[in-house]
Length: 362
Ligand SMILES: Nc1ncnc2c1ncn2[C@@H]1O[C@H](COP(=O)(O)OP(=O)(O)OP(=O)(O)O)[C@@H](O)[C@H]1O
Ligand SMILES: [Mg+2]
Image 1 (cartoon, rainbow, N blue to C red):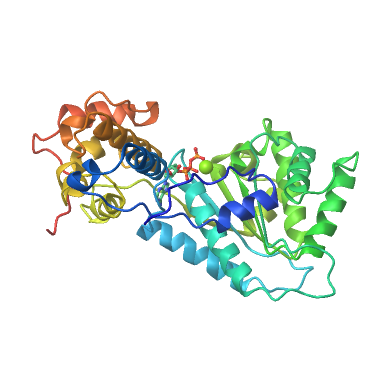
Image 2: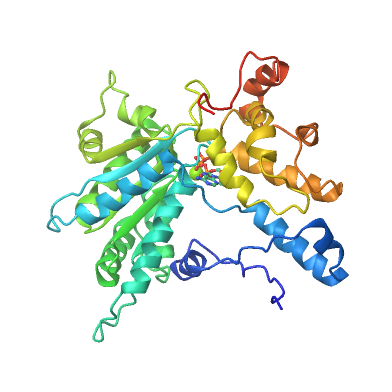
């Protein structure tokens, strides 16, 4: 008899201990049920399965698209090759692209994978009193100056809120990075680099100093970071510090899916997603074949729009009792503002033969 489902405990992922529990958490894959099996469940059991599949549909497993896999491989290659002496600045990786293209998702996947492997193979050092912290993962979001960034690093490392000046905090942070053996520092939302050009330049200089002063590999993520005036203000050229920063960066531009080449990437991704849908009347191909074009029209191939739309359509399939995804079920579901302009174009021409998201070779 299957244990009842219990939602995972919520963790504060801006602290290492919470982040680590979250990264190591092994989710249970919900069982599949047919309409007949579902109808025979007790009310409590059915309610429990509904809760489990609702959580699952809202957090579908990561799909390793060709693009995502290439970035994960690059992260792995960088971490294993960054063995330069401590006083050598090490190359860093930047995942750059527009909102909702899947930058943070791929970054998290790479960090979780590294952390799980590291935890499984780590040999505890008996004499070391410092706790082992292999990954630091923060977001720049509200850290708009150097002190804010230093505080975020300090908080993730779970240091007491000591240090008055940015220098004092940074010193404590650097000491801890060495003591705890931090291997990767990931900073997301790098486009919050600074609200003004001067602030942005100070910040990029500060980050460059971190790169120079620690033995870690840095992974950055951000929304069109390289287009920031910080790196192009002076007739398209960064200042000297910006130039040094850029010389260390290996950029990876994230793109949305495309139908221009009629490759099978979109359909393959929908196929992987369909595998994870838990609806009692699902038929193979409902998503990746029958609904491929309507999903393309409403998302323009952007990840955030896709994962939200899929979650919403699953909720609707369950609520209406239809328990199956069909093109008609998408009508009336919200479209986000970013996907909106593409959506009006594609929805107006849906099914008229002028375009398709299905691959050429079928
Ligand atoms: N490879 C993937 N497999 C499954 N889901 C994904 C994948 N990539 C992205 N997603 C989903 O798309 C959503 C948006 O992706 P993500 O947050 O990574 O975008 P982003 O590029 O970081 O956006 P922003 O610029 O706003 O930070 C995620 O919440 C996740 O659910
Ligand atoms: Mg993001």
